[in-house]
Image (cartoon, rainbow, N blue to C red; front, side, top):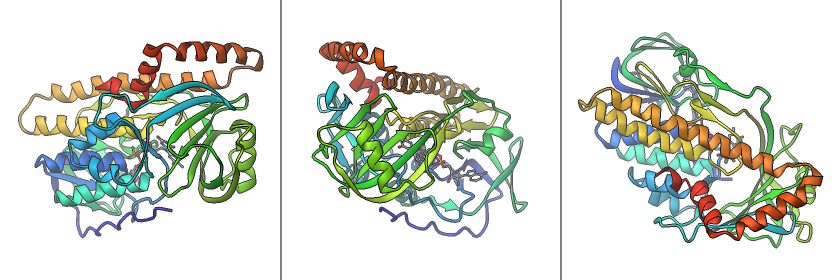
Length: 389
Ligand SMILES: Cc1cc2nc3c(=O)[nH]c(=O)nc-3n(C[C@H](O)[C@H](O)[C@H](O)COP(=O)(O)OP(=O)(O)OC[C@H]3O[C@@H](n4cnc5c(N)ncnc54)[C@H](O)[C@@H]3O)c2cc1C
């Protein structure tokens, strides 16, 4: 599908020094770098890959994230390319348990924006380029000694600050000796963008609860639908038959729909983990390097993008002369938010998979709760991220 991530210009050399070295040019590194570049900070972005990723992955951008991206000029081009889903519902097969409306939220973005991660990265890369920045590739960080960062081919860069935006298996986090505590087992997910004949809505995100686990239905701008589900043994490349059986077992019973094509599919294993600290001396963490959790609620990349802009602003202040405590404040403010999002994702998964005898009680309780406007509002604020303003 959207394979339009532009190739980054190849770097000739790394600079000897930089104020901020951003390690990783995923969405979080790009957003942090665009924030810094936009405020006139000397920033260098490196990535170990020769080219940017072009797969779909995270597909939802929430209202709070768009508010934050607007501060770096990246919201408008993104909003123009996605579906504006005004509703989110939790269903048990055909029964709607909780309807959540985003269109009543007090924000310029009263919807969940459905857009592929490849498009999000492309918009952020364009923004960075417009601000005079670029990504230097392929440069793999292998060592950090104080302010000196060492690369696989032996080069070193002296950086006042190093941003670890290098993903779940962050080398920067390991080199800074920052623990990454959480559960060991992890959850295995299948994920696919499919063409599907189905009467289910194309402007609504649906979280189906079922005894065998959740199923997320998320429409995408090209008419395809993103399906995400935790399964015991996710196939490396999910096929039509496999996804059809998931849809039959977990989705709507009356409007089953027929999966006709798998455009892109993958699997991933997610642990619930939060880094022990988001700062150690000159090293700061953001995004998946700092926290990972289940995609229930579609919060992962959103949380990271909010980290990125907050960190970019904090670094700008400190480089401009503010005390280093501003960086500690970043770490202290963002870590509890990560814990809260992990707790919320866990809660959703637990609720989804209650044993059969408890299911009618759960459903009755959720339906009753969803009649309480304050409960529906709270859920809308939580999912949209506005609660973290
Ligand atoms: C298959 C799949 C499906 C997903 N689906 C969803 C979803 O539905 N919803 C959701 O919210 N999230 C989803 N995610 C997670 C989402 O993609 C991440 O939350 C998001 O990409 C985090 O961005 P990031 O920039 O922190 O890290 P990443 O996107 O992982 O980027 C890290 C970058 O760092 C670079 N790097 C790593 N190590 C080094 C090094 N030593 N030196 C230099 N560069 C380095 C890597 O090359 C990479 O480009 C999915 C992830 C995968 C893999």
